[in-house]
Image (cartoon, rainbow, N blue to C red; front, side, top):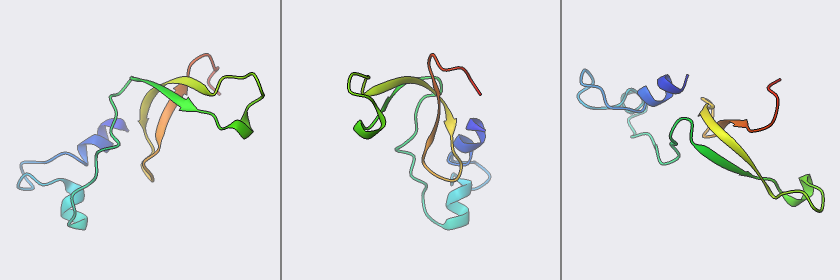
Length: 82
């Protein structure tokens, strides 16, 4: 899934060095939110979702994008997958 997301935002020789998304919507896609696959990420936990002495963040690993938005898929370290 991560590969397809990046591929759709990369220029193709057949499309005259335009991206497939650029051909469809006639606008260059924004890629400023892109991250390196497998990089370490810290997630902020708002005050109302934590107890008084709990940490204000969680450590995780980036493993993909959500296709419908600019959100990330993150594996939180120390948490068992469901």
